Amino acid sequence: MLRSGDSRRTDRAIAVGAAITANPQASLPNIMEGWNEIRAAYRLFAQEDVTHTALIKPHTTTTTDLAQNSPANVVLFIQDTSELDYTQHRSVKGLGHIGDGKGRGIMLHSCLAVIPIPGNPQVLGLAGQIPWMRSNDNHDLNAEIVPELLRTQSEGEIWAEMVEFIGKAPAPETDLIWVSVGDRGSDIFSYVRRAKALSWQCLLRVTQNRVIQKADGTKGYLKAFARLLEPMAFKTMVLRGRDGEPKRSVNLQVAWSALTLQAPAIGSERKHSSDFGLVYSLLGTRWG
Image (cartoon, rainbow, N blue to C red; front, top):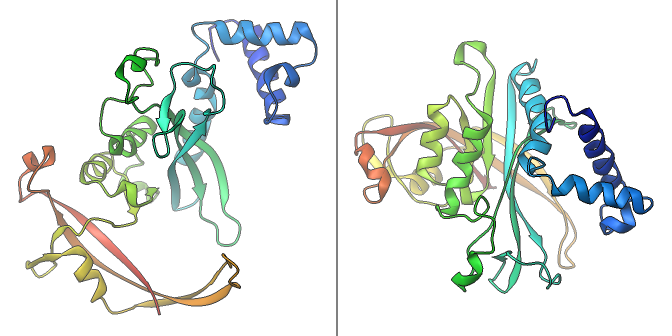
C-alpha cells in the first residue's frame, strides 16, 4: 500500500487507522495502547511516503472499480467540502484560514460514490479526497503551509479536479452513467465542460442565470426558462422541522427540457467561443 514489499508498514497503517476509527475524538496518545504503540504510530507518520494520497489510494481505487462494474444504470458521485477546524490548537503552524477568515484549519473536498437505490442507497465508498488550504491574509504565514496544500488556483476548480482525479466515465454504449453531484458552488462552466469531456454527467444546483439556446434556436436566460416549464411530475416530500417549527409535507413539481448552455462572454472560458455550448437536460423543481 505504501511501499512495495513493506507489509509491516501496511499492517501498521491499518492498525493505526482502526484505532483512530474506534475513538476518533481522542488524541493519538489516548488512542494507542501503550508507549510502544504511540512511538510506532509517530514513526509511521514521519515517513515521507506516508501521505494522505498513498493512504487512501487502495480505498479510492477499489471504489472506482466497484463503480466501473456496477450492475446499476447510474452511479452518483456526490462532492462536497468540509472544514477541519483547528482554531483552538494554537500551537499548530501552517494552517489556512476557514469560515469567516478568523478560524484556522484545513479544507477537505470529498467525493462519495453511491448507487441511488430508492429508500436504501448503496454507498460504494470514497472515490476521491483532496485536502487543501486557503492562503492566509498574512502572506509570511503562507510559507509555513505545505506547498502541495496551498491553493493558488480558483477554489471553484476543485469540482473539475475531483472528476479528473477519478478518471474517465464509462463509455456511453455501456449504458452505465456516472453523475457528479454538487451544490450551487459547482455551478461553474469550466467544471461542466471538463466533466463532459470525460463522458461524465453533472447534476448541480443552479446559481448563475446563464445565457442559453433553446431547442427552437432562440436564446434566453436559464432561470427564466426553467420557471416557465410546465410540471411533468410531482413528488410529495416531508421537510424536517427547524427553529421550533414542526415538520411538514410539501409538493415538489418537476420539469425538464434540453437546452444548450452558452460559453461565458468574459473570462478564460470565453476562448471556447459563443458557438460552443454544453447540451443540458434541465431538471427544474419548485414547490407547489
